[in-house]
Every structure is written in structure tokens, then in C-alpha cells.
Image 1 (tube, rainbow, N blue to C red):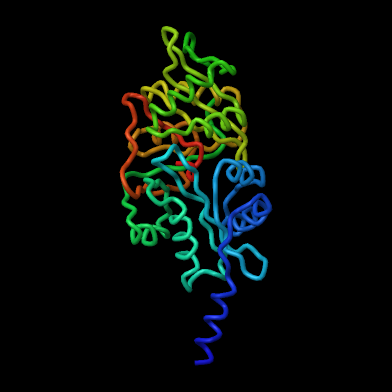
Image 2 (tube, one colour):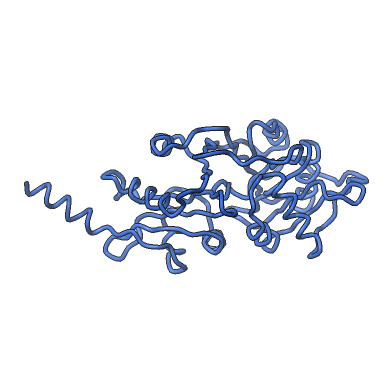
Length: 288
């Protein structure tokens, strides 16, 4: 009986609270414990765009979970971490269930590790694809293709970029796209005066991430990625791409090795992109 009482007291001492700006440094500490390469700036950017919860024990953050809302119908979730000393005992379930409660009525997207699969499946998430993580310093030098139709974006391009992103994802996420454009270098692909693709490169983790990258064909996506790589010669680069779209083999060939993968999952219904517009590379795995 004494053991049971002590365990209940320990559980009661753990509180579920909203994620606020003061939690950013705690999130960084937890992600470093997991070996994730996020910078403080990456956490601050994600927190600025999203909502979240923390588990707190005796004033110390021991778990985080974040969400990003897209219109009235969709959301993505990620940055779900519980410190090693608090794993087990239902803390991860309490944190995730609390996050889901804030998203009631929405269709929810996430990218899961193999370890998290059971937790999510028990809550109604089903796999629908895989995301391949590629990174490294490209072994190939790139030159721009003549007449490729790619140019730097300007402020007047933002509405067209936002509209193309919604076509490619089926998600209303104009605020996130505007923030991503503001944080990075955006290239657009035009044909006959019509925007048919875009890609953003920005500082992230150990170097740079190229993503989102959306286009109407895999060849156009490669052109946009190559145009960024021309400007990132010698830099560490990461891309997270959907396995179904076939870019992984090409990324391997240019020296960006696949170092991991995630299981793309949904609770509810998947968004419906406006084909042929396709999202080839993610801004990061948490944003969906």
C-alpha cells in the first residue's frame, strides 16, 4: 500500500500546462537529450506558429507536444518528447491525449518514428506513407539549367506561393507559408506567366533545410532543389521527402544520404491536393 501511495503522489506532482515562450529553452534541452539537431531558433520559430502543452514536474519541463492548425479542418502534431526519467507510467499518453483534446473535430497529421507507432495507432491514427530524411554535404557541384524559369521570389509573389501550397497540400496554411518565406530564401518556377512550383531554403538544425518544395512534376522539383544547391555549395543540407514521389534515389546519387525515415499517419481523412500540384519536400517533419 505504501508503494501505491508513493506512486500516486508522484503522478499527481506532474502537471499539464500550456506551452509558452518561456518553454522554448526547455524544449531545446529535451530535443538535445533525444539527439535531435534543433537550434533554439528552430524551437522559437515552431512555437511562434503553433500551440502546445508541456508536462511539468516540480517546476521543470519534462515533456512537450506541439500542434499547428490549418484552417478549421486540419492540424499537424509533432515535437512530442518525454524525458527519459519520466517515460513509462502513462506520462506520454497523458501528454498526447491532452494535445488531442485541444484539436477535437480536426483531421490530424503526424510523422511517427517506429517507436511511437503503437501509441498513435491506439488513438486511431493510420499509416498512409513514409518520409525519407536525407542529409549531408552534396558531393556534386550544380549549375543552373539555362532557361529553367526559376527566379527569386518577391513580396508580390506571396499570394501565388500560398495558393500553390494549398493546391499541393490541400491545407489552408497561408500564415505558415508567409512565415517560412520570411525566414528563408524562396525560389519560384514560372511558365507562361503562371507559378507552377516553389521551394524555400532556410537555416535549420546543423545547416540548411530545403523545404517546402512543391511542383507539378518530379523534374520541376529537382530543378528547384538544384537551384538552391547552387547557392549552398559546401553547406550541410537536409531534405525530408515522401518515398512515393521517387526523389530519394536521386538525392542518394548527389551525396545526400538517407539517414532515417518516418511513418506518415492520419487520424480522420487525408487532405486532397489539386493534382498535379505535389508537395515533394517538407518544411520539417513536425509541420506535416
